[in-house]
Amino acid sequence: MTTVRFKKLEIEAYEPGKSIVKKIKRIIKLSANESALGISPKAKKILSNKKLNFTRYPDGKSKKLRDQISKKFRCNKDKIICGAGSDEVIQMICQLFLNPKDEVIVPQFSFLMYRIYAKIVGAKVIFSKEKNYKVSIPEILKKVNKKTKIVFLANPNNPTGTYLSKFELVELRKKLRDNILLVIDDAYAEYMKNPDYKSGLDLFKNKKNVFILRTFSKIYGLASLRIGWGYGDKKIISALNQIKPPFNINEVAQLAAQESLKDAKFISRSVRHNLTYAKKIKKFLEKYDISSNKISANFLLLDFSKCKLKAKLFDQKLKRQGIILRSTEHGYKIKNMLRLTVGSRADCQKFIHAVKGIFN
Ligand SMILES: Cc1ncc(COP(=O)(O)O)c(C=O)c1O
Image 1 (tube, protein in one colour):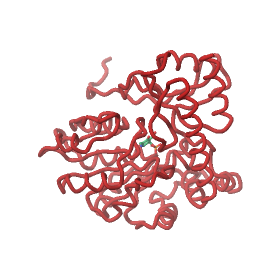
Image 2 (cartoon, rainbow, N blue to C red):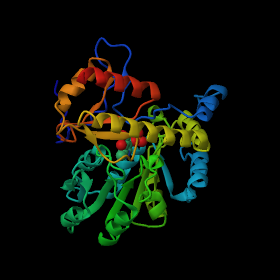
Image 3 (spheres, rainbow, N blue to C red):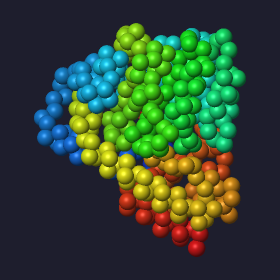
Image 4 (cartoon, rainbow, N blue to C red):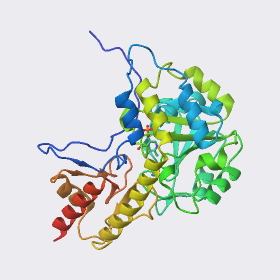
């Protein structure tokens, strides 16, 4: 018997933040930028109260959820498409726009799924250099040519935590050719309280050549339910609906997402928690010469270049105690750094205690 031949893809598969350490039961997972406070009480309540029926297919158009999103973010429900995570929306965008030989520009250290999905459909991925781990507009513009179809950008970016200001984003859109789609991934927008920041959605709601990505996996705490959404021109949304798997979002995810959008209290509590603990941890690590990015989203990129310990060793020592950070070496190819998610109060305290133990 032979294996039927399939495409040979030159892709480094996505490796998610680790969640287990052999022989350790109590794990503190600070490796995947998940919500520190879990899911919203409103979402929890509806999931436990509602008599859920798993026999029927879910609403393939996620109508109630799109209504709720449009109310909350004051945007047009007909310009929204929901996906099984924003991940699936990235995949659909690549399927819809890219032909083999088209070019996609992604900043050097940007979120990995843009390059993966672009490569799967045969497009060429072009990397633009960054300056001090921040996206550089001139470097993106240098890479533009006739074949450029999409520029992908996470703002703030994962894993670097840096971001383009509202002025820089507007400047980038102005300087890019009109027929290049600018995809702005707002995955961490809710955490952002920096005065020079504005989300892609707020800036470009009415632009036909900007597409926005949003997720329920981060501040809304629904990572496991796989739900996110995209926002763009009606014509793009209608074409995406033609290629979308018919029932991509399950009923539970739709319900939980609707409820979590209503829970403004939980969102502001999460933002406050994040700021408090990001500040605390940042300051604490500076004592050991571990520096990090200016606070932005719910994670910090830790730089060990001035520290007496190498990132790898620090990571191993924490892992032995069941505390898992995200290595940035694999995939992102950033050496001697680690990405740390801001966890719950208890998780942060245990992290601080463990670090003290390592250095003393
Ligand atoms: C910038 C960015 N975009 C998208 C995602 C994926 O989100 P989702 O869970 O909605 O697929 C992540 C997850 O880490 C991310 O960091």
